[in-house]
Length: 334
Image (cartoon, rainbow, N blue to C red; front, side, top):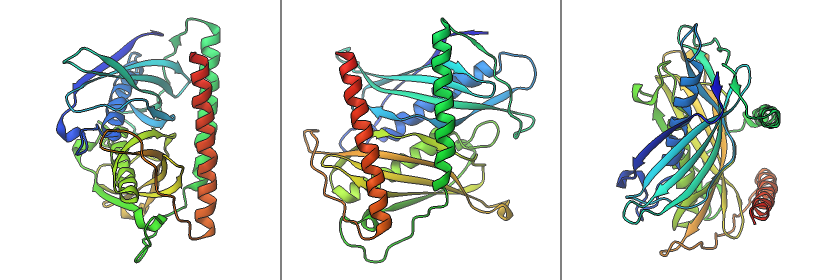
């Protein structure tokens, strides 16, 4: 039995290929490190019992805020802790610190909650039961159960949008949805995959952040950084040899931020009869920065049809809800 408080830590210095041209570390690079730490601790925990060996697969990442930017030359310290287990899933909470090794200064850049499901190495469709952890109080276990029930319900709700597609637009007008929408195609190779031969969740999130960043940059034509990511839901596993299409489109703009919806579709090359399917969905929020790193106003999004207006209003609701949550969190900390 794992005692609550056991944790795993990764540390790595940020290099030029981890960042954009002005030195800001890509949000996708940080997301990938977060998933690596979560995957290690959850897989390690699920293999503490006798029976089938297994690998924990990422099922969902809760909303993640990028509290402070990270820069080339800083050391990222990623700490992961298991905070709840259900019969077939593991909740991992992760904190990311950026350390300036010249001054010794440290700051928290990210806090994230991830959910993993363990699959047998012998039978990739078999989900393994998760060893229980020991909680410090009944209240702590009850709070974990509430988080588990909430994420399970939200995952089911997101499946309703999985039929939507992003179609190309010919000669789009500036600042419209079609003007900035972008896609990326990637062939899944062995280095992208777990022992099962399925794509690491962190690899997928990094690709999603790249596409969302291109959408944001095309809209603003400025330096942009990831501000937050709404829940990322992994609906189906992506196997080695698949071609993944990662597509992003602008859904909402406020004065200082942009929301981009990102879809990941997988197309099996070898097992083509299975057909293309929606694998992952998420909303990314970006901000535009000037040369001093201060927020710039975002050009308003031009809406051209009822569907775009509907998505804009839905994005506005998420924006206001998240703004209210941040304000409530600030008040609690004061």
